[in-house]
Image (cartoon, rainbow over all chains, first blue to last red; front, side):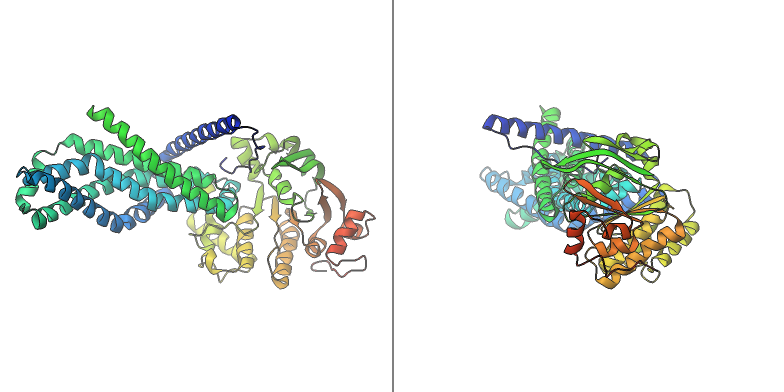
Length: 270
Length: 253
């Protein structure tokens, strides 16, 4: 049952009590998010049904394709900044031709998935939390439960599938745009020809970098969906509660993207 | 049909229901009236286990819904239609799609049968011309009527109405009242209506219960209710300018 009763806790008497309660709330939220992920994964077996299929495609369009504009701009400038900063340093050793490698490896290993994750957390995560939060406070989730429609299967599962597919694709697109941005800076600011830049970029690019980057992006997609849906379902107290849930969703997504990103890198490269 | 047995519920440190007991009979329109914050909606939510009692039991027929989970809960809930205060329509679907949703998701009916049944429900609530609009494009009263169409589309035995006339102009409110009366008369459903609008309660109720200070103060038919000697009832009647002489009239009579 997703619909929850309003919770009330008596004010704690001392600082230790407040800290203890905070820790318990965090553990409770982790438990609920894990259960939500489990239920959504169980619902994936229904993904080929007509309505679910349509919903997944619709979510892929809403959350993926509509984010392309902002992703393109951010990726281009990320690549441009990377190329400029490394190019300025490498030029001191007349090695500016190697900016291609620097941009490609940075984008594939870290910056591509990371920037995509942050953009999607801000654009998509906030939208998901706000939508589900509004549905919760306006009793639409309760209405679904009254109709014996599982809100997790109906709302979370299609978003989870769509985001798990779209985030790696968008991260790959971010990498390409970043490399293009780096190439533009190489050509216009550092005097590196496009052919030399691309040749250098592809020579040292490892397939493992691509796999790990896409794995990270997929994990970020799962994190954004589950955290945002969980926060949305937990919204209470009308518009203020929805705003609070949205803010919390974005903050938690940002933090988890940083932490998970670090541990995946550590796991594959150390 | 629905029985509350000494139900107790505390919310935010306040006792909202304090040993509430009553019974809703099959086929009647049972109105729970009371001032805002008296726990009327909380009572309604206990009937379908959107809330669970801290103490006491809620029965639907012979089944204990307050302990039900999983498939058992789903089976008991299938007996109910629920009209939420704001209609609770899904914003990205049209009115027609909203009404058809329970049939699409929970039955094996073919598209044509779903369309026919949906159109019949829309006609019943007078929204046949507005089926293709989205909830944002229709008025509050229309949302409630659409919510009602969705609530009854699977032929429930019991329909629960949470403040069906709140926030509506008097003409639309009486139209909703007429619809509720029609549900009972024509479809034979048992209705439980929660409202603070006593005019509406007296108009549609077979029996009216006054919920105040965590308990049921009075349960009586409309005539008996306005003649009740209980001070709380008379104060509540007076607060809505209703006296023993009227003015109020039975819907459709």
